[in-house]
Length: 159
Image 1 (cartoon, one colour):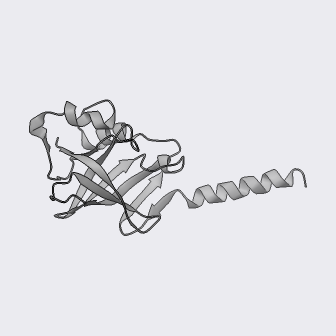
Image 2 (cartoon, helix red, strand yellow):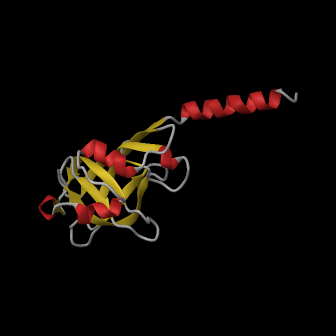
Image 3 (cartoon, rainbow, N blue to C red):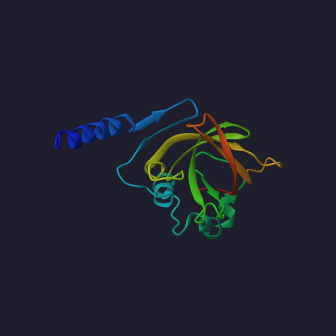
């Protein structure tokens, strides 16, 4: 019995890991990586925008002629740094769904060890700004089946 408990626990953990390697819903889909993938190198590799440093610093680093508040496929959405998101966040636009809705790919979005390993292949994002300028956005939370809290956004960086 002493050896049986660790074997049972290992089998349960392996089963859970196999079941949670990907997710797919109408508003978000993705997969899990074996180790955390930060949003900055992920956005750089997907978008081809060759900037470095914390996510929120990308906005000021980018050439002003390559920044704007209109989403475009391949552009990088830059979220501001806040007390909640100290380093800011980056996501790459994969699809324009409508005038106030896009789909993005990004990584390291969440608030725990498991969500830090999540890579969203696509996730819906709403323009939550009052002026329709994408200065505030809401990401789809597939676990709660609704759009989440609003986040301050700087805008989009174009390649």
